[in-house]
Length: 145
Picture 1 (cartoon, helix red, strand yellow):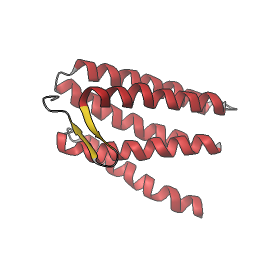
Picture 2 (picture 1 turned 180 degrees about the horizontal axis):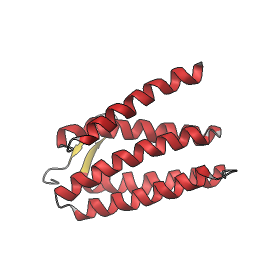
Picture 3 (picture 1 turned 45 degrees about the vertical axis):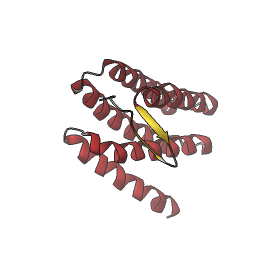
Picture 4 (picture 1 turned 135 degrees about the vertical axis):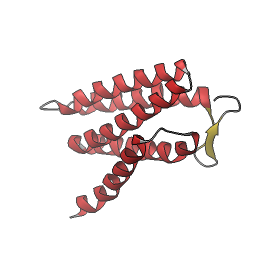
C-alpha cells in the first residue's frame, strides 16, 4: 500500500508531462518540465540506491520522454549544442536503462551511470543556458534563446 501511495503522484505527474509533451514545448513550459526532471532523477537515484531497479526504470522512461520534448524544442530554436547535449543524454539514459534491465543489475554501475548522466547532461545544458540555483530558481540566461 505504501508503495502505491508513493508512486501514484509520480505516475500522475508522468501522465501530465506526457500529455504536455504532445503539444510543442514553450519557454513557459520549462519550469514545470525541469521540476518533473528533477523529481524523476531524484526518484531514479533513490530507487537505484535501494535496489528497486524496476522503479528506477520508470523514472528513466519519464526522463527519456522529457528529454525528447526538450530536444525537439531546441531543434526548432536551432540550438545545435543543446540538441547534441540532449542526444548524448538520451544515449546515456538508454545505457542506464540497459543496465537496470539486466537479470542481475549491477547497483554500483547503475549509480555511476546515473551520476554521469546528471553531470554530463543536465549540468552541461544548465551551464550553457541557465542561471540561478535550486533555491532562487533557474531561468534562461539573457540572450540564450
